[in-house]
Image (tube, rainbow over all chains, first blue to last red; front, side):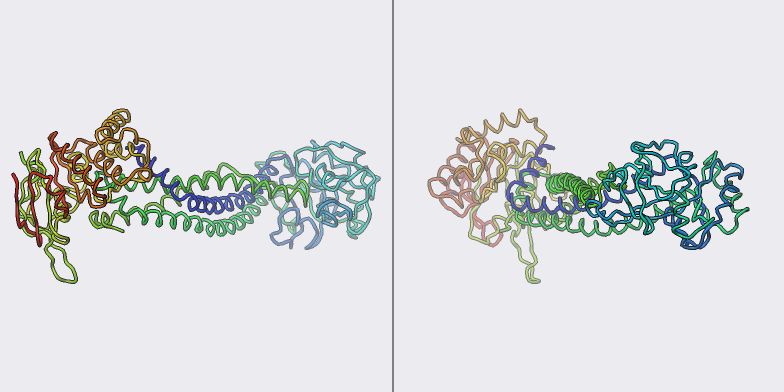
Length: 392
Length: 226
């Protein structure tokens, strides 16, 4: 019994090969497009989770008036600056192991490859003496680290240097001034692989922020007690905003939720097209075989057999289309990564076709097949057998 | 024992708001081994009668008894099983499944009845041999002539060893030579004890049955033979 409806379902798809192929293409495009789109937000979330899992600062202290801007955007002194001397006070607060002052800058290189020419690269101005304390995994691969006496020097993260094809001695524009690359870091699998660093004093000169900083990164002895530390800092410095890693993660999550909602809406449209493709094919396929179904019923097939036969056909069609769509979506995500690399080189964001996406794609294919099969199956069973037997 | 019996069988359709009696009080008894032809002009109600006998349609009055069991009030699922195991159908347009080979078409009712793959394949080949198509088992319907297709249709009807075969104009779409072959095949099956009821408007085909029933306006107008 099982064999018959599966055989019939499968072989029926070979009756009109071009129609089947066209339907498979439609479903594959719909699913592939969805998988490709969702892989962007999944990839971003994965990259973000990876960064969140690294050993960085737990709190980011910025002057009030930055709105809800998350790190690192909040470190640009958009709403004012903090006194540099407050940093050492923060460093002495109970539970705080280290406080590093910071000014967020941007660097650019005119002859950078791809689309990176003149593109602003995140650069942080920090005191040379605290650099390795907050980044214990950092190692200089070429050149040397920043020194206290340095001014217009630039230390590039591994990925940044690779993307901009930086060599020791190259010049970069930071805040309109030329900085010379004196050090290139090794790959550490940390966010700072993507950033550049300049001495804090140089940034203070350029931004005319003598004795001031745009934010403070705070490392705690016990990250689980971030709220307590935050309360203590706020008690001493009421005119600051403090963002914890969790809050930053939440605000990124919110941004990603919005992005995912847009992707989902676009995907729904694509999936609707998939449903229409399979449903049209199934309705046509069933309406062409009214007499055949009547014959099968007359010779003894139960209503369930006919439903299973039509459902098998519809599900085979949608699952094959879904499988092709997953492959297409995977290809699409790799294509996005490739384009990303061509234009922007190694990027923080990589697409990711996660198991969750594949499960969603399979579930959606099943839904498409079920919906597209059940409607014509019930319609054909509604009509009297004797009438269907005479159907032309 | 009566294989099939009708008692005051009625089937009324509503057409254009008016009731039309397609079958109007037919009482008929078919015993095991009978070969009955039901003849009549177009619109006389013979196909409607065959549909009622085959449990494809439900009567609006009277009774249909299959092996002395009143089937008029049985559930759809029970009627499905009854058709599968007790009744073999032969259609005017054959209605083979085009995507299945001749052997697979014959196997289909056995598959539905839960016969094992090996047993149904052996029986299908045996039945195809019985209708002279042992070498055409792997051919699909489109690769067979009309006469050969009808032979496959007869083999399919015999698949579950039914109590009765109901044939609706089995020679209606065939040339005279093929029609004669099908008539001979049905006769030989009947000679071996198979009960057959055949609806036809072809007098030559009807003449092969030992018992002939003519119907007109939904009623039996004449019966002949034993």
